[in-house]
Length: 199
Image (cartoon, helix red, strand yellow):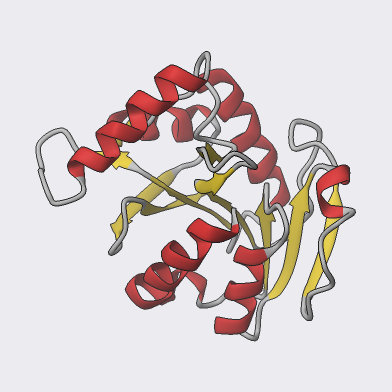
């Protein structure tokens, strides 16, 4: 997950730093080795970071100042924080093959809704939010990255049973089903967009 974070996180920090204003803590759901949360805590030093992933993943993560590693199952619970953060990540396996990993990206609608419900339970109702960094397929707008987003959708069809890229309507559906009252979508200088979902 580290290689993609080094491209997307700076684009997010420059393109929509306001997303992190007013937060004091953030849990990176499926954070892997902690690269993303480390970059966010460095950029926003007032944040207390939690790197959350399966126990066997965080058990080998290096110590990071301002970040606590927590291992558990996202379908069971998510650690409490002001914001839950989920990001699509691209990693190369040991054979150099590019893979995509994220909680909301690799799953069908029902599993996504379950994960988002757990994220919603982890954040405060008054100021909490879920921040999702993932591709959003724009049906009417075409830009330089449209083909890349559509290619990602084909990769998801080929490598998962139910995973897919989502358009704005599909994001609205799963966020609504997970009991979020509203959401915003912000584009950044990357294939991904930043989605903020509020209780």
